[in-house]
Every structure is written in structure tokens, then in C-alpha cells.
Length: 298
Image (cartoon, rainbow, N blue to C red):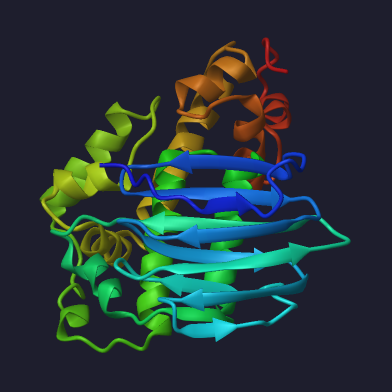
């Protein structure tokens, strides 16, 4: 079930112009939104069936924020600050935004209850306007997916969501015996299943959840075990396989760059160009030219 939680905004002056620009996306067990707000005065509230994590970029001339009606902050400069609210808690308040476009990047996390590795975040207490460089960096990567400037790939987004869960647990300094249960890698047979599956489905989106299910592991356990065995995260491995097939197609066929991109699971040529150049060092067109094929690439 996909999370349906979102930030509820309430205009202090109902007749004012619409100050919002909102972009939302959702995946199998979490959703994300980036909200950009013109100078205005707004109330807001978050309470739902999902854990809430937000990165703020705003300066308010006035306002206050409370968690569970108790912990209260009137901090005005909230740039780079984070808020965490677990399931069952709520955060609300009001802001008077002035002089600049403000923004909030929020994630609503609802990991499966059966995944006890992810479920550990339910024990983390709410926290208002704290700093954590790793969580901030991961949220900014997720924001790039929402903005369209990053890689719009299901497995990449799922990996970022799982990374947020992991970093939340680490930030809370949770020390549980379960953390030591996933030190080993995958068996040779499990690796073969994964590699065969990726090869057979290279032209479509491949989710971390379905790879984990293939070998009967939780997503957390699977990512740790896979990296232990292969030296790459599952997402990095899928990406490298896509590029490997793309290299072969560019060398041996006259398919256009657009057709190659779709054949190996990218949404378009621009996404293939970005990833190909990052991993190989040249564009697909340059690679084809340097490897002696002068077909229809562009």
C-alpha cells in the first residue's frame, strides 16, 4: 500500500493567491514531495499513517512549530534544518514567509511491518529542527528525482528511501542485536537468480523490493548481503548492467541512442547520456564513434 500522507497547508488569508508549487511522487512503501512557497502566511499540519522526515529551506519573520502539542520552536532561520515525526505523532504550526521563495522537501515512510530492520525507526523519538549532513544529502538527492534533474529510476528511488531509514537508525544511535544478523553475503545460487533476473528484465524498471523477494530476504538484509557479495549496491549493479548492455548494442547495432536507452531500461536518451558518461567517461555517441560504428546514433 502506497503512503497517502502529505503536508496539510492552511492559508491564513483564504482570499490570497495560490502560493504553492508542489511536486509529489510515490513508490511501493514511501512517498515524497517538494513544496515551494511564495512569500505568504500559512498554517500547516502533518499527521498520518507514515513516518515524516522533512528538510527545510526557509527564513520566517514570525511563526512557531510544535510536536504533539508540546515541544515548541520559534526559530526563524530554518535553512538546512530537519524535522522527524514518527507514526502516531504530529507536527503543526504557522509561518510568515517573507522576501524569498521557501521550500520543504518531505518524505512519508511506511515500510512493511514484516521488515523488522526498517521497523526500528518506530522507536525513534520526534525531533524538531535538528541537523544531520547524511540525511540532508540523501533528501537532496531525492529532491533531484522530484525536480527531474536526477535519475528517475524506481530502484534508485527505493535505494534512497532505504538509505534514509538506515541513516535515521544510525542518527538515533540505535544498538540492537538484529544489526549483526546480516553480516554474511548471498549464496552462489541466490546471486545467480539475481543476475539472471536482472539480465532478463534489463529493459524495464527493477525494484529493490522484487529483488529482495526473489531470494526471500528483507530489503535491508538483501542490500547488505548483496553488497557484501558483489561489492556494489543492488542499484549500482543494475545500473552497471544496463550500461554494459548499452555498450554492446552501441558497438554492434545501428539502433539510435533513443532506442538503445529504452532497450536497456532508461526513460530516454538524456538519462542514458548522463549515466553512460558518468560510468564510462564519454557520451554514447562518442563511444560509438571511437569503437568504429557509424550508424544512426545521435
